[in-house]
Image 1 (cartoon, rainbow, N blue to C red):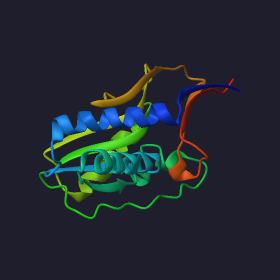
Image 2 (image 1 turned 60 degrees about the horizontal axis):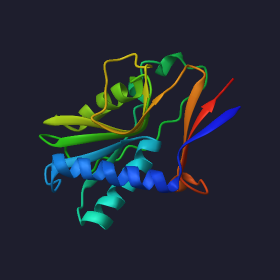
Image 3 (image 1 turned 180 degrees about the vertical axis):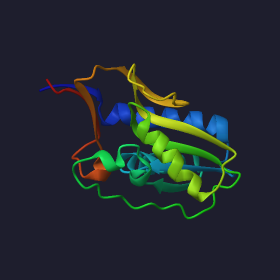
Length: 180
């Protein structure tokens, strides 16, 4: 198995700070904006973004988490039982500007399922997508992010592995792993 480092802890930190600047350009004080992380790793990334916004800019933003397990198009096709993650959206999305966050955008199917789950909490005025890694040339659905940490050219035998301290890793790293 071949591993190539995409982000180390320092470069990930710089990238998240850049993404925060982009969010501030479009949402200013976040008074009518919320951030929803897609379970599981989008939630960890959402927490990092919230922490950066508070520590570096003094901006507080409402965050939540979405689980798309029961909205997936392959839900009943899997051989193993799927255990859903907790969903936490303690506010209405009615008329809000929503930023959906995920760690890796691959086919677009997880994001589509997350959008379906999101609509249970109200009808937002707009929805934007922020991803840490955009796997180019692999989309099956017409979904593209507005905010991208890094775009990576990948092939079918490669996988993007995101390791974050919030989920128990020793340090923040993002790897491109060739499964061959």
